[in-house]
Structures are given as C-alpha cells and as structure tokens.
Length: 363
Image 1: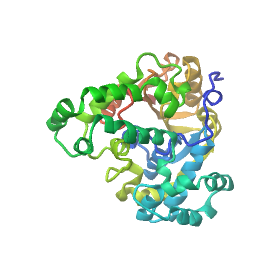
Image 2: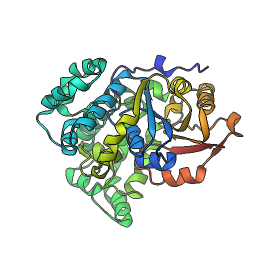
Image 3: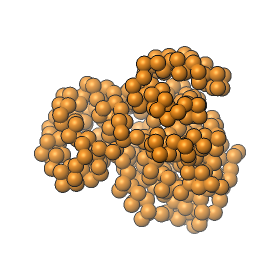
C-alpha cells in the first residue's frame, strides 16, 4: 500500500497542464502501440494518450485531477466533431474570434460535470484551451516579461529558424548564451519560482541540488544538438504558438487516425496504480514523471501493483526530470532495463527539460 500520497500534498482542482510536455514521438517509439495492445497512460493534457490510441492501442487515460480529465474530454469532443482546421482554431493553435460559439455547439456532447467545468471558464475557452494551464501561463510570463530582457525578437526568430548543426552551435555560443540569458534563466527556472508559478512546490520535495542549472544544461542540448524550427515545445515557449511545429496528435496527416482513436480512449479519475489494479492487464505504461513526486518506498509499492497486472513483454515508459528513479531492485528478476533503446530515444527528445528517459520491459 502506497503511503506518500501526492494527492494529499498538492492541488489537483485546476488545469495545471493544458498540453502534454513529454515528447509523444519518443513515447510511441518506446511503447510501440498497436491494435490489440492495452496501455495505461497518465492523462495530463490528453495529447500523448490520443497519440497512443491513434496508433491502434486501447488506452486507459488516468489522472488524479478532474480538471485535467475535463481538458481531455473537451479536446476529445472537439476532435470528434470538428474538421481539422476548425479544431486548430477552437483549441487555440491558430486564430479564431468565435470560439465561444463553437463551444456552444460542442457543449451538449460533454458529460454534465465536464460541461459545468467549462461553462464556468468562458475566458479560457475564448482564448483557446491549449493556453489554459498554469504551466502554460508560466511560460507566457517567461515569454512576455523575461525573454525581452535577454534577447530581442530577431534573436528569437534566429533561435527558431532552420539551421545546420554547426550553425546552431555557433548561434548559441556567440549570440544566445550571454550573461543575461544565464542570469535570468537561473532566476526564473529556480525551484522557488517554478514552485510558485509553474509546478506545485510539492513536486520538488525529493529534488536535490540546483533545479535551474540542470534545466539549463538540457536547454543547451536542445538549442544546439536538436533542430529548433520543428520543435513544438520550444516554439510554444518562445512564441506562444506551436506554429507549424505541431505536436504529434495535431499533425494533419494523423488526424483521421487520431479521430478514429477517440473511441479507444477511456478517461478515468484516480491514482494510476489503483486504476491499473481495477482495469488490468496492460501491455504498456505511459507514466509521465509520476515517480518524481514520491518517496522510494511508495514508488516501489506502485511499481509492484503495475507489475502485477502487466502482461509478458509489457513496457514501462517514464521520465526523470530532477529526481533519479528507476526500476526498484526487488523487480530486477522480472523486469529488464532497455537502456540502449531508452538512451537513443532520449537523444532525440524535444521536450528538453527532462534529465532522463526510462524504458523497461517485463521479462
């Protein structure tokens, strides 16, 4: 029985993440979703659960937050009922001055509790729901208040422009990485500021050392080693829009598959391990970074429950941001680490703030 209950230490009554901030391309290559597979997925903003279902898997999307599930349900309803361009307009990817009218057409299809949630938030709907999370507002403050103190618009455009590897490295080291960038980044992405404005302070309970320094190291990697022009996370952070760099579930060529996958997504409220125990067995787990918030004994307890309802060959996929978490030693005989594959995928991970990607498989 798990004892360190994050739901008792942090708030889950508002939308914290309007989007998923883990790279769905990495996740899909790791879990290899396909028809006949069942995957338990942390719901968050819904994006990655939808991407898994689009590949044919049946997905149980679980979350401690009813607000996050309301976000997922509204996105799912919009995907089902709107054409592709109307979807992008409604959720806030491209400009639309009539989102409330669109919502009024979608609302009758929503469950009563989800409709009540969004009826009370017309401003978020009018602006576009991909901007409605606390984490997204945190990046908006960064973009509007902090970035102009470090760089002008021309430098931001150059950061996000298509460049060769050599050109990215030269730009970062000769233009971008100035003393203002280093100073303001360390202040804004400090444990204190992130806990106040972005993530819940309780999410940092088990973090040791400097938060900002580790994120800055990953930022340098993303700005130099990975392409920036097609990175949806960088584009959203620095421009407030995905632009042409859309996350996987919003790519035009996948839209038909994503829409077909909506009937394979089940949204469930509750702790992941309890839902897994009730709804198993599963062929894969998208666990986001849930182990980061918990002590080691609780992680081992949750891991044991998930292992107990895992089919042979089932995979565990999750991220470490600041707290190193891996398979508990007690499961060394039953679960193997797929370290080479995880490392190769992490090298391409465009969601740059994580320190590691972990992939493990039931023997």
